[in-house]
Image (cartoon, rainbow, N blue to C red; front, side):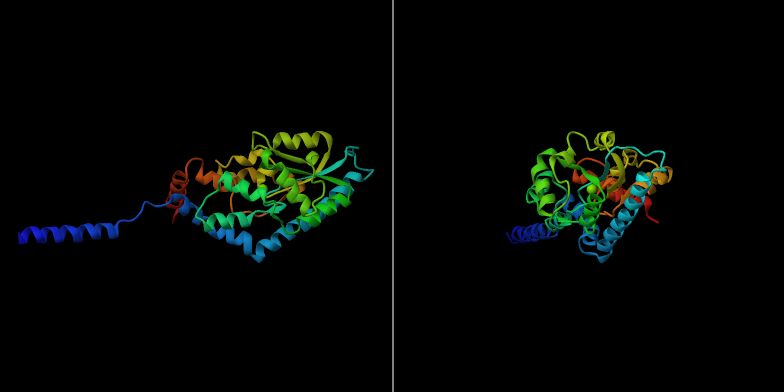
Length: 273
Ligand SMILES: [Mg+2]
């Protein structure tokens, strides 16, 4: 009898202990989300990001001014009468979505299309530093502005409202080319280029300039940068965005959060010193 009682007590203690040390399965979404925290902090709070955007847009204005002088010069043999245009991306180029990213990390979430739509429905994004001044300058210089974005067509009204509320020029249906099926912007850029002389493009992803930058299989795409450095220098202004993008997709790949987290973990294992 005493032996049985002792055994029961022992089993109970062992049972309690096993429950105490039992850890829940890791939440891969939360782990993956947390990995982006530094990048989001940097984008959302740093004076460095704040200045880098302004610096880039000042550079854009200088380049635009130079390019317009060249295009309008009578001695320029390539002079054509097509109207002039500037192409800009929207997210992390003219509108700052870092508050959405901060909230995603606070909740332990990764990117979610429904969450994102809730954010864009609010039309609450603030202009990226320097973006508004640059685009107003472009307008004053006689350039039309085209917004080529991979926001979904269902986000059209809220995006136009967001741009208009902030006073962005040319924020109308004719100048907004949303994603309709493909994230590849080549065709949309070509549509603008068929009717306008595009003097400058601005984006936070190299793919905002050329789809060839989607391929990161060789040297993370840096070889493509070397190959295209002349045209990049002349026609493109790149803005900083460590929060997401092709660079990260190249490591994480597609699939579930668990799969992405496993690939990130593996990358650090393989590349550790
Ligand atoms: Mg963007």
